[in-house]
Length: 633
Image (cartoon, rainbow, N blue to C red; front, top):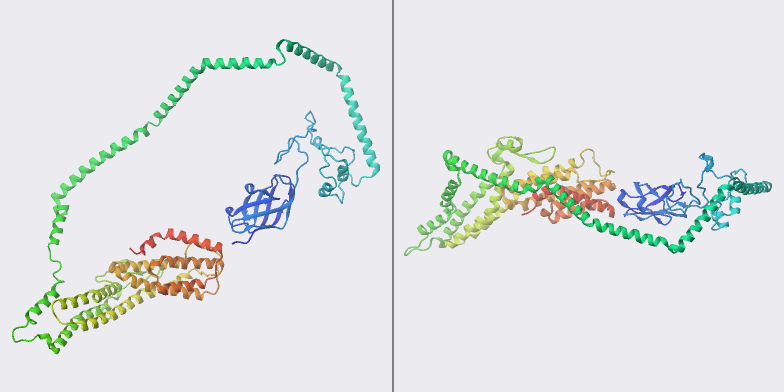
């Protein structure tokens, strides 16, 4: 979990509804989606909130009144706290040209008649005719609300309080000045009354004409009411509706036909405009059929040309050659040993009259076991010589090298060197495959054939040679692992700290590091080489190499002096990704090494673990091809 958000500053800290507020603080999230709640004085303002940075949010206040806290809620930090307050207030009166974020009732006292357009005419003058001066110790609005609840100091308001007005504007005015202001207000009221009377005197004729007009209007209304009743407009309304209904009856058919004609016209326009779309399927089908016909003709012509020029390349010739191969005796070489055993049995071991069995003699039995051991030992010597480098010094130039850039084995096919025999690694793999097959299959098959033909048991030479082949197998496997594993593991540490990298960094991880990808690619290269020789060797070789990689990672993690939060995230991403990719070839030792390597990395919190999981998901998608290369069938 991330730390909770804290609000430490507001700008401004008061205002009417619709005020644009800059909220400053800490832990507001790392992206806009982290902001899930914002309340100002208890009012939800999330819809107007705009996330700027982890330390700044801009919002617009709602219809709030009074003081309250600004509370920010984030996805990972939860509900936060506030060290400052915001005060909201409503404007008492708002003119027709002033913007307001909330609905305000129109003030009835506002003069909608003609008035001067000068800016000074919109400024309210003091009714007492005194100058309003700012007092040093002015009473705050909260205190005035406490003295006069539900009142205000605005003259145009219905809740006007004279005492509020005097305390707010004339707190320091003397009593004599207040008396003079009262006299001024009295004279002003009297002058307004005299002005109204003089207006009537000057426009007496117009006023009388208006009164006469009103009297005539009243007389005519009373006269028509006696004739048409008290509600003449109802009859008129009925007549108008009846006329409208009759008129619609006359033109309903015409209007309906007009609508149908317009619909038909629009449909025809659409068909004409997009005619090619309706014809497209049949055109495509016709073109496809034509191209199929052309392709069939070309194929037939090419077959006739091939028959006349190179007749042996047709399918018919391939079938004939395959039939010839199937008639061959493919088991002839494999049956030589059985034929030899049968010939020996028939010629030398058959018992005639007054003869004893040749193998009943202990010396003959020992000689047989010795000869069997010599034959089997000869093949062992051949395999041993093939796996030795002493007889192939002239082939050193063809041995693979290790790339200093990516650390992968590069064979002659990559370097461009000519080669007539397999490389040293391939010779080891071929010899190892023959050794395992001989130990598991060939020796048991020879022993079985001896028993089937009536010979005495040769379990002694077979068991002794199995031990020799098993020791040779371990020796060849060690040589191959030394040839492949040591250079592969040796490139991990230089690649890990390439570019002056250190685990005490402040750069957030976005992918596994290049050394991890290099390990995967190197293992894929070894996998490809083994797969070309014998698939059965994959488990025995790749498991050992993965153990070596895991042990090297454990050593490097234990040698790291310090981990930052980002460095710990990167290390966990690298180790877990390698462990997941190498799942098919993990032994218990490798698992324990990976686990010990993770134990040397500092523990991550919940949000960091979520980040690591997201990166691992992206890596699995990006490295899908490499993962498929190492997957077992």
